[in-house]
Image (cartoon, rainbow, N blue to C red):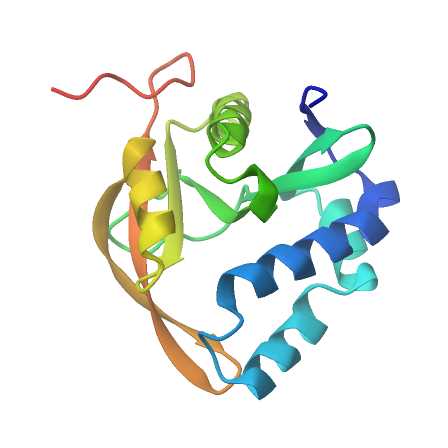
Length: 182
């Protein structure tokens, strides 16, 4: 398999990112949520125009991984998102983090996370926070493996469904790396 390359996405990636975002979201949540709510959310969140707007937003940073010019994974950082009270107010939010299913378990997610932590450090933070659906055990295990710790919960909506997320944080050292656990 050719190597994965990572870069910061720009507005020319809107069409490909919209397709990747919808595919990976559906792979993760289809069958877990009410179909009508899922469809409404996907339609509102992952269209090309919406993705283009996010890519043009100076407070959102989108990192993509590609092989032979085809997007395989992406992560989005929100540089100015207000964290919940239990999180350092200077923290950057890891808003989205998705990898195409054929790359699960192949080190792609770890490589993407390294790109995320480097970008967070360059943005001037030493803390990354995220909300992950409380029923997504695979994602929670991955984030723990990366050094995130659970600090609380918050509610979120998927259409008319109230869902619960685990709030997790990752502390970085001055070089943007995860300090060793003691």
